Figure 1 (cartoon, rainbow, N blue to C red):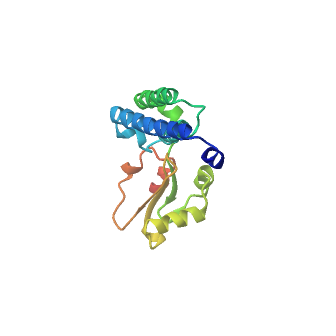
Figure 2 (figure 1 turned 90 degrees about the vertical axis):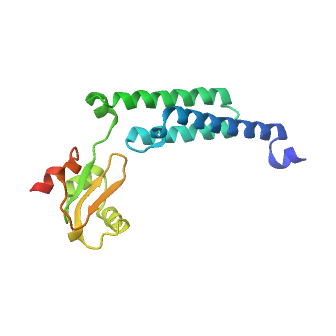
Figure 3 (figure 1 turned 180 degrees about the horizontal axis):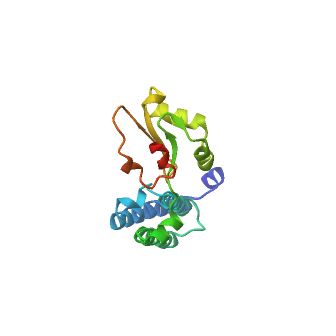
Length: 177
């Protein structure tokens, strides 16, 4: 009766439990070996690999089509790829191939329209990020940057802005005009 009611058997449920625990333990071991950078969101590639980790965990846990050993090996390949890309990113050619560049969206209180278009960001998005950063006045804004991860950084306050912080940001020259 239980099988018909849930559409599964106790054996299948047991396999789901074993697979879920197994893949979770594999992620813990791989992360301990690879380091906390495994789950950082410092680049687009980091974000994509984190999504792939989650997808693989979910597939192994819930799908009988992906066995635990296959999932553990696939995770190992993903962690290995991440390590290789992380080392490779030290070279400019690889970094340019896998990383986005941050974009300056506001220089002081001035919104840079062409960079909004480039980043596919709206003025409403900017206002929302200013509110999240507790920015009370456009005059307090020093810079707003669309980071490589898609996050938006709001630099505000009454102090001077060290322009070196914005090195490598597309449009940073707008701050010295």
